[in-house]
Image (cartoon, rainbow, N blue to C red):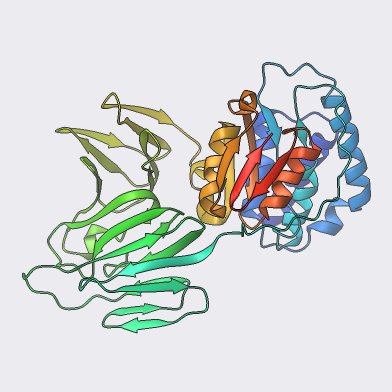
Length: 387
């Protein structure tokens, strides 16, 4: 029996345990991880059995779950939609998670409400604004082409090629990702950077081997896969945000530094980095996260699940004990909307769950309403009012 068959059988056992109401929190987490790791397989629909039967058993589990007093547990909602999931295995796991909603109120009515919503709020897409060293700006978006000097873009990626560079002043470019956008850039040294919505990166158009390769995340969130220093005559790679600096040898990490958030959070996936702050140097190892509090000027460390912290790169929002207010902030960046809570009492209620980034915002809100997460919502232009 090959590894694939073993994994498939293990996955199937997890599904059966969940349908029988026997899964632990760890096993539920494994199910979600299997969704991500097996999403390109195709043979799972037949293996899992008829979709209708699984849905029926899921519904029984839900009805049993909501009878339990969960007043001290966070709500759990998973809003995967089949339109988001491209492959059969993804659809199979969606059957498990799309109906699984655990909440504090007892015996809530989850009858589907069919509502047609006309809104100007669209799903985010590949888009960015490139600012060249001469101050000129170029709009990059899906379907567009751009080529100049050592730069090529197909509207979804921006690729720099390395050029010979002497010791004269290095030219810098800026890549700005608006709300409702994301973009991928490959720097001239081969470092790959995924930029999230509402982010801005400053970087050199080329690098000098043997000298520090420095870029600046002015604000926002970025995932770095850094070209190793061994390929650049030992040149270290650094990323700064204000007076906070990440020193890299060759690694993958995520840094989040939004202007409207109090903490600068760095999560290490592979390799190692030094977090430099106020003259102190802190070593960060894989699966560890540093959090710099801008108000108190203190830095703390914790162990995290890096797959949750970096799932946005794969097109998934992963919320782990996040308040509804925090969730809406994340969604507002991707869908480019403002949010107003008319009902302030639900802002701090906590949830865990996952959402596909291609889900329509009206579908997400309708699911929340149907499952009594929120009482109601309405659109006012590009503002969503939560009731």
